[in-house]
Image (cartoon, rainbow, N blue to C red; front, side, top):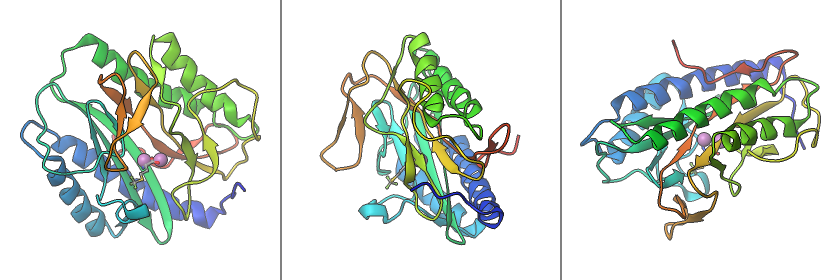
Length: 250
Ligand code: MF3
Ligand code: CO
Ligand code: CO
């Protein structure tokens, strides 16, 4: 069941979304050689608390981190720890904040002195796919138009969307209906209604869509061993353009 939010609920999600975006951008700015992913998570936990929210991830189905940090061939759900970031790394930072019962979920991918043109192309294309998808998330449009636009952007760039993990409705719980795949034919699925809140989150690979979950039960890895990229915004469907609830300050 897709829950359409009231204006008061959307206002709470504006607050949690802004908090998540702030922490995402602050953590992204901290990513540098020698910093550990555990340090990024610890900082994020402190900032989320200072801003008046709580991590939506910590304890979610037993998840042990304040945020997800996914480095290189880690696609999503990487667990922060002693891993030191190095020059050439591709680091996805995924932040979820709950405020007054409502969640904002957002991710970005940072390149640390990456010179490999294929990897730069991957990261740029994934970010573009996110915005192309958001542009389709208008009231009255079919849900799969979002999915299709994301897939088309990746495929036209010679890249592959991950199929095993998808975007999602979001609100009082992190993963609500509807699922928002990053692939599929257009013109399918329910028509989007104004007030529906969804997290749109392309995960894009080089060479193959295939991924595997590591033995820790969380970390998703590319089967190719090549890097992956992930960008995510929480948006509210509107008459006209969707409102992005997790935009940064710029
Ligand atoms: N933020 C992820 C998503 O975008 C979910 C993370 S669940 C966690 O859907 F438990 F790993 F934090
Ligand atoms: Co997320
Ligand atoms: Co999400």
